[in-house]
Every structure is written in structure tokens, then in C-alpha cells.
Image (cartoon, rainbow, N blue to C red):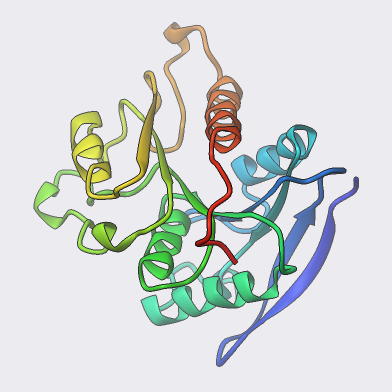
Length: 223
């Protein structure tokens, strides 16, 4: 099914662009936000929107107000979180929702879910555990408050969190799984000598998501 563009109102911040790609018989909707430097058309999100509907997963991707306005600097955390809440509120009721995204987009999703926003699962691609070289600034305080299953999917060469650091952080979430992308960096790029392309890594990441979702049982904590 062709992608449909829509607008979502964010209280106090105008409206943002979202793009919905529906599966014919959707079992899940993956609500996706890109990283800090990307917009609603980011390549990984577009790849997910093309491939996941074939696996029965609809995709709703969106951008934050600062990208809508053409600014480089991300909005204040309160605005980023308000955007996530507005997007989740705009979803049709009744379906199973996995919220997440890449880097900052996923991090903000995890924060609103930890604060009580209701979804069925979280998928955090390239979770920015800490700024490069600053493990003392780990973004973990909210993780123990997450009450839904969470998938952490990052590269083994991610400067924002080494594999063991990511595993340790994921243990703070009661129902979590870690999938490591061998040789991939924070942007999911790999060296040419690996014999793989970035698209190969994207495919592995999405396969990890769909396999994980297929194993999740319907619970009472969704929307």
C-alpha cells in the first residue's frame, strides 16, 4: 500500500509531518522517530517503511518540530516528549504499538513510556547510551521505570555505547533483549572489508525486530 502523508498537531509547537505505510493485515504498528540530525525521510526509516509492511507491521514515521521548521538544534526535551505523546495519541485505538526509533528518536520514546505513556513494546535502534567518550553521562535513570518489553539493537562499534555497556543498561529493563549488529557503528555503517553493506545491516536490524515482535504475547499494558 502506498505511503500516506499526514499532519499531527503538537500542543504549543505547531504541527509535524508524519508518513504512514500500512500493512495489509497489520499485527503491529511501529511508530518511529529518527535521530537528531535526520527528518521524516531519513534513509533507515524509509527502508523500514518499505520492508516492514510486507511482514505485517505498519509503520508511522514522523519528525520533530525543529526539523519541521528547518532548524538544526533539537527542541527542548519537553517539546520532544510532547511530540511523541501527540503522535501516539493520533494512532487508531485497538492495535498493538511498538514505539521507538533511531538514536535520539528512540531515547525520547523510552522516556515518555517510562513516564507512563501506554504502548505494547519499545524498539531502540542505536540507543545513545552516553555521549562518545563520556560513560559517566549514561542515560539510564528512567530505564527501570519501563514496564513493557524493550529491544535494544545497536552496532558493536557504536561510540555511544559499547556492547557490554548496552547489555548492562538493558538489564535495568525487566523484559529486555539486546541484538548486536557486528561491525556496525552508530549510523549502522560497516567497513567495506566486512563484505556487508549498510542496507545489509538495516535488513538484519529489521529482521531482529520482526522476529522479536512475533515472540511477544499480547498483554494488558497496551493502548
